[in-house]
Image (cartoon, rainbow, N blue to C red; front, side, top):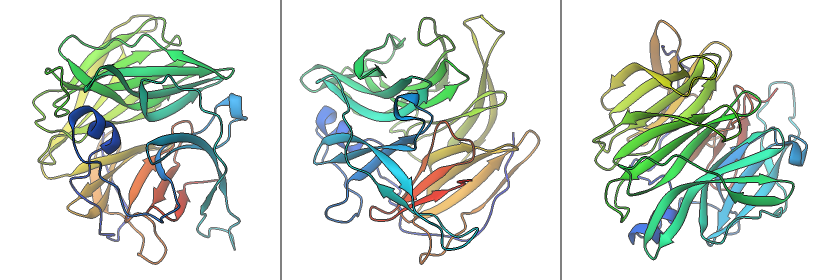
Length: 331
């Protein structure tokens, strides 16, 4: 696959920000990192759309003082065609979660909302977990956690067709979570009844976490080690109904930085990364890879904070600096 991208640097991202600071703080004794944000604004952790339980609206998962909530993100009125669109957070919605679960990301498949994260197995110990919410009821889904991950969390998630999802499972061999040194991929096409699994990366040291995106050919994945070397892969099932993943490397890129979001469009996948405080967009197509600093001046772009993919909507992503939420790719 390959890349091409717009230009214009936007600094100020923390290169060493941990992907799930509050979760790792509870599990590994780390001090939670709090990005700059308005004092009364909750932090956005994830986004998704297409859940029929909320009429397919654009939803975000927010965190404030260790409290998690589901909220509708309403697009504001653009002043003119093609103008920037900002989002307005609605009030918290009921989010029935198990008491020992800490969420990370989410995606929807029709009437089911899926949340990845971690389940506390003992004081100071967490295991990757997946929660399924349907008709206001929630419960743990059977997630095939590899035996070589003694502790960790389920991170990225992407919907696959009408009833499928892909989940990144990350952690390490030690039962006490200290770093995300291994990344694995689990895929189901039947709502979690059967799974196929594969290895994305090993030896990450203190990895940054995996990002995923659904494409017309399967799943795009990008993972990075602590030095910012990224590995990109594509994954597909061997054939319909066969629980076996075929992983194809798309390249290894030293110094590419921390992957923030993978966003699939009609002709390419955009991988947004934080590289020493600069946001870059790298576009993967079938035959080339191109890269540039991401476009947007500080005055009109919130990408000085975080970029979040929106599973369920091709070509859409959010940019937030903790106070303003920009909705990109909305149509």
